[in-house]
Length: 131
Image (cartoon, rainbow, N blue to C red; front, top):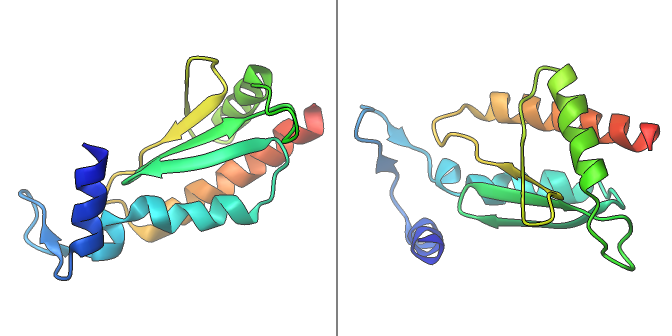
């Protein structure tokens, strides 16, 4: 699963080709999770407990504060609602309902990913302002 995907991404020196595509996929797309993580980390949001990834799948965990790391499902719901109002659909998950999962398509252009991250950041700011 994830370890194999990470290892394949780390050792890929030549671009892979998607079965339905005639053009090779850039290696950066195979490591989409690593592409997005710095953007999420730079935001420095105190209500984000952890940002973790497995290949292109990214999980953003929301907490009441980073000292207690208590799950914050209300913040998660607020971010999902704010994102939906901006036209960005997010999936909340986790056993404590305090995680948002992102899984951008490997074929999605970087410009679209950047736009989605901008919408996510604005949604985080909206949810924090309303808290």
